[in-house]
Length: 387
Image (cartoon, rainbow, N blue to C red; front, side):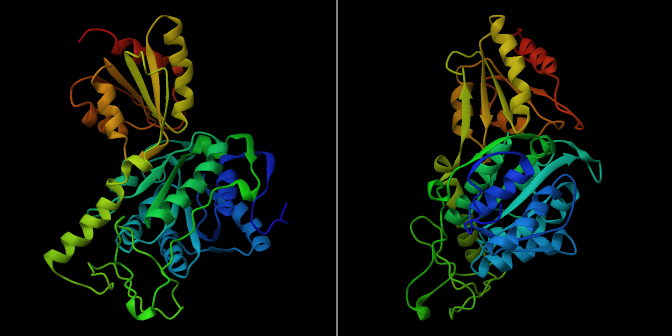
């Protein structure tokens, strides 16, 4: 189990989503993880702690989530791919450091295995209540990328993608699992290491005296170096110039923050990812993510069996949101149905993009279980009735 120094356990396995996430991180080249135990994410770091000694990785159980979320940023500036893992209350504690990673353009991955809240809530039960927090939880203007797997196989595949996106855009990437996906056990096929596409960090190779850690090229993403290699580096959460030195001016703020936002927004078409089924002839489109994309399938199938034209759009990348696709669909469908294990979060993005052209119906759920398909089916029926 531990022999391959690449960290890749090639072959077919039966494992839960938490363990598959661990394997994806190791396959992506992650060699530093800091975390603090919290249900239902603990299995991710348990497997990391077991496997890391055999592949040259370092796992540290920190004193809390605040320490964990800053430790990974120090590791990233030391040249290592790094990740932290949490849930619920721990995710809330990490918000300030997500903002720090955004302004310092530190590539790292935050895994959130969502559970029902608020506060301690239902620690061992599912929810999807952190979706807006993922996008807007820290203060100020910034952009992140967030992915939402719906199976253990995707926990492996998309964790690799999360690291790749983080390295490509020098941005914190959030991996928004939920308890059901984290704890369900399914077949996971791990390919050989040479078949896995890995994006390595883009490093600066010019003269040391010419390096500026926040000087961006045409793609708006600066090149990095390793701390300790002799380059002058200044990393601060203050508004800064291309050298990293604080610059407390309106002009510096406008220049820096606009670039932080634009490097994601202007590449949104490359980042956005979704899956569609039966949308070409649809009158109603069910919009889902995470485990809800699976509980919605029986309802959609039942509706189509009864002659209703129902399609399914599943968000794989949830942030950036697929605005263009929702707007295009809103021009021709009668309604969107949005089941979420919360009382309404991503539904507001659907409403915003639908812009009143189509009805938008939320199927809320306070958490603790998944939806009953009959509730989603009822919402589909309702969406096809007259206003």
